[in-house]
Length: 464
Image (tube, rainbow, N blue to C red; front, top):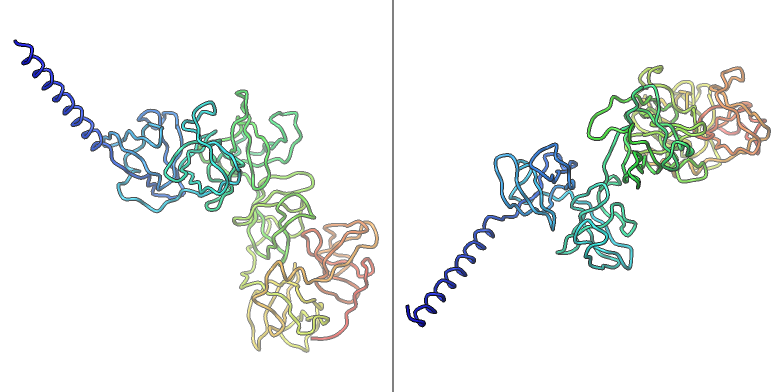
């Protein structure tokens, strides 16, 4: 073959190779398509696994709406790519139609933070600053997989560089449950990752903890959070991804107004709660109970008089609503009557801001109400049904205990059971007054205290 023909043949073969490569690249591009994570429960997350097996290690757990590149698939598993990570996801939890996003959003606070290309602090990274919108696509024990604009990458889990603007506080973290072999035992939350460290509280089986991360050095300890309280728990007594029979005691509130503190500090922030609420005891110290009331988690002083064991108490009377005493004259008090009549015997006179549990509407604008353990009737013309629970309590007069061991009793009878005693200087909120006694709220408990034990003095006074 002559030289010219040889070169022509070579050029033809090269052209065919280039064309074939283009065709293969096009086929690969066509094979890849965009799908989205779509769990039936939007609160759930989908595992990206190393192998197509439910027991294979998880590389991360991803929220609904996360964009995924589909590489190959069969009836059960899909090989996918998310950013720079490749792994396997269950095919039935992926969809071609973009669902509503469940990805939590954050705002960057730091003027300089790294977005890593891989979950590796020694790897390549891009610097970002404050004010960036960050979407959390998924997370592992130590890393968050995030999206910043059109770029995806990794940041250390729970980075202080971000402020959450949507979602819940447990986003980005694993959850576990306390799981002692002996259900009657409790697990210590320690100040440090050591059995010798001080206990921050003892927690019952079934208590859910947010796992902030494993500790360094390969130990069994985990950094955890319960409500607002952070500490360390021994991982041998935590259950991941399995239900645990709860051993947490339950209670019913018997007070129309009681405080749940954000932290174990009586001078700190608190939220007001009312009568008939279901309360779960998560854990305790000698001074404090760590409780859950609905979605609210916080602290009350240990053995509070405002709570009664659900096992020992009958179901509470159905509460219609909560109202606050609201006389037009703020110096006046409203009578709690034995019957629904202005001529009926007064059981006590109550100050503006006193919260009452409204149990029943009766004739002529009167309502059957409860204050602590005391039931009676009040004229609805002097009740505010739209009052702020916290704001109402702030209007109550405050008294100071004069002497040590001042008893708080269940009823106005001095011979009734004493369920708390207070030292001189303790401040109490005065709900109402009677002949020789004051109905008070003290450290979350509502009861009766002799008027002579308080200063200033409170008198029975005028009528309503």
